[in-house]
Image (spheres, rainbow, N blue to C red):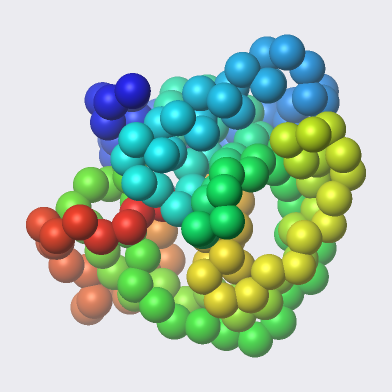
Length: 159
Ligand code: ZN
């Protein structure tokens, strides 16, 4: 798997509201497996289906505890605020500070087809919000403080 499979800034799919998925069928299972591979190959913390050109409400994430997926995720609770640097595999080399909720609860269907509600804080909460935005056609640069946007060449983790 290569970086070239990732759709980059300028592609319409990144600006399109993704479609709900019927559930964890074979097609979605395959999609998740492919996304796991691409996320790992690019050392991402998260990856949303539109980032590989698939306009469906699915994202995967791995903040160091192994990869997981959420299907049809939605934010059900939010609190607090955190400000931190973010990047995106679809906008290589750019970083900026984004204000996010410190704590979120996300409901959806996991990679085993179970209905779940996941409480997250800190980095995982940030990743969830970044990936949820992708499903609605929103990119981190829309929310970043423009004064903090910078080009980076280091191997920073991107979502
Ligand atoms: Zn991203």
